[in-house]
Image (cartoon, rainbow, N blue to C red; front, side, top):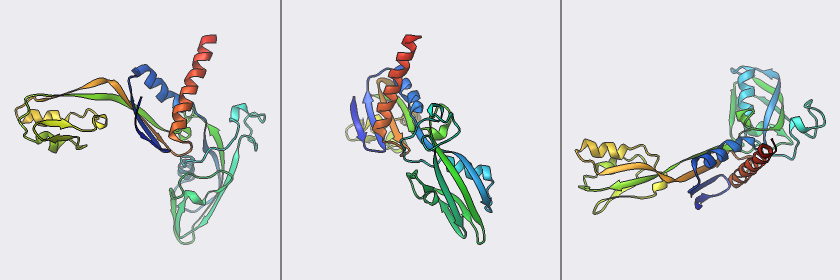
Length: 248
């Protein structure tokens, strides 16, 4: 594994793992338990948005994970208690923008400046939100982040006449020409083939691109948990599923 970028929010690495394992890691990210608002009780909404839209927007606000039990594993049998649920309140009067930071309670929002709705003079929004742990396999709001991969591009450049048309057309600016065309940061290439088409329009067939054996893997966290935790917990989920499959 070759690490390209690694911080709290994002990990990019190159590996020779096969597509089946890469796809298993991608899918298993949605088996990680993540906090999100699951129910909203709106007592007053004078805004231009329907209650359902307000609830939808609040449900997509990332919340920092709390040590709670999953709803289906709690002693309350899904009714909702302090062990599996956190209550948050929002009460705002216009004029102004209602932001995610206006949600107050035991759970903490990841980003404070996510806009929910604009209130005009005299308008009010008042509600109670109930946050729980859940998994992305049940609803997208419980997804911990964006996990995807693609094959590393393999370039073959021959008989280049240095017309520089490929340099102009590459949307990512990966190609440079000194004596001949060369590609920098190949891992960024998304195989769009704009350079290949530009070369052909000039009557040449100097550039060939094909998917390589190596895979470029991307993990971008929404902020509930760190990107490295998404990778680690995805692998743990795969191991657990393999154990269950082995017992079946």
